[in-house]
Image (cartoon, rainbow, N blue to C red):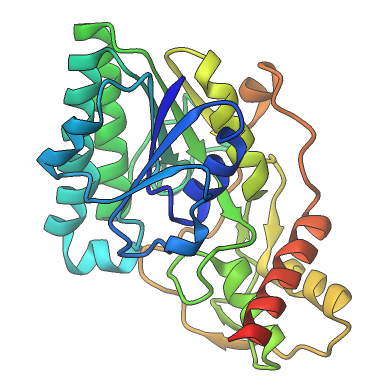
Length: 302
């Protein structure tokens, strides 16, 4: 099977590529704006290309598109919503048109939190009303609506995977949303982690390899919107405690005012995807240990 992974040099995308290369012909498209070339598995074919480029059609026909490329910086989406929409909606639509033309299946890496906004109930299931609080959430939701419409109009086969807070090795510790990697980097360098708010805000942390497995399994699923999550809430204060246990260090957190657009509580219901056979989830302690070891190694070699 010939599979295109957009954003395949990025954090999540590169782990998906690793899971695919021994069984399939894998093509990676990434403009390296945030992705890193050394993340790309040597068994994949890499193209330094933007998803909006007309050159992408030369790579087709493709059996499956796994679309991970995105503008994911919440703050940037507020400062420049036009750019956010150009990447997450227009760039995605160009791929969607190619999927329609060449009858490719489409697997979409969606946001399970930003598309919801402040939840009306917990855990949040796939039927929960969606009221995004920031342009990033709106652009990701808009593209999901396009997927649903293309399915009805053109019989496009798709799966939308709604990610909780993904963490693990290769996550940028200097990025916007990766609090686990940011904390790991601070602890590794004996610096104080910064918590925006009182630290009681919760997230549903799901390990990146589990997310990659969900994408691989989605090749055999059809026309579904599925939460990829653990269904477990962890506060930032609890997260710091895990780092204390793993690092054997005394950690003093620095508290600052909450950030605009950040939701206080987030946990997704994962019954639907588990009913399809996705399980064997990595525990938070094990996942953070692997993440911390990776960050320590990166810091030693830099």
